[in-house]
Image 1 (cartoon, one colour):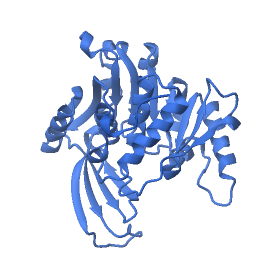
Image 2: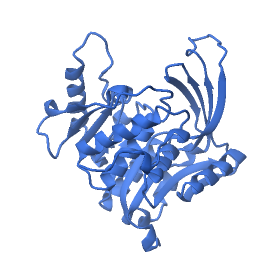
Image 3: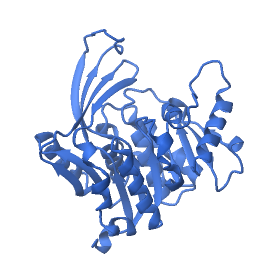
Image 4: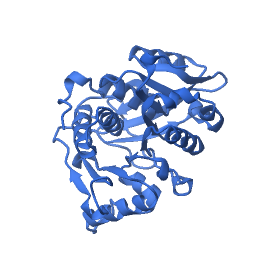
Length: 324
């Protein structure tokens, strides 16, 4: 049973990774080896990044559901999360498995490429999330779910949250073509794909050259609506996000682009996670969806001026006021 002090928080379900990062002048081409000029490491994983981002933006409690291996990376990762004030009671330890890792390369413009080995993240599975206590959802105000865990587990946790009337935010990152058949979107209140993830879900290529970009984005929004989505923020990098709100807009053609602040990017790693943390925080505080997206853009813009994943995530006092 959760205590009163643990009620009305945000539940985050997702992944934990250790990030190993090399910075170089440019990203390598296929089959090419290049010499970098900096190496560093830190904790990441989309779920952990979003949980840390939400906690730093002042939400308490943040309850995290994830999986770690029985190794030093997992043990130190949990300690790092607890130091951020995150409730880690539902982080599963799989002794015979390694904790997830991500290999990241950064170029001089802050762009990245990432390869991840999921490790214990795959054990955040159907059986584990189905056994989570009902009170975890009954007392939650918002559920945030990302990928890097099995799609079947995502489906269960979304359905369970909706059965208790919890608002659900699903960040379908990284791309997973299995979402086409998973029928998850009817259980999602807020959907936050990027252009690549939109293509994985709908088959529509927003980034295709020689097309009317706005028209293609409207078509993508309609395709997501047809699959059950209701509030959509397609993140578009430095351009901000392309947004539709079913509660205030009559058709996909009314979608609007919300611009992001112009900044000099150092590292875009975890920018999407920071956007989702900002959006979840703004919605938690009752901001209308469009205003929440605008604030999330501002928060994410801070993160890209810094290096690292969790190291880049800002605290509440570094961000603009939360006003509508």
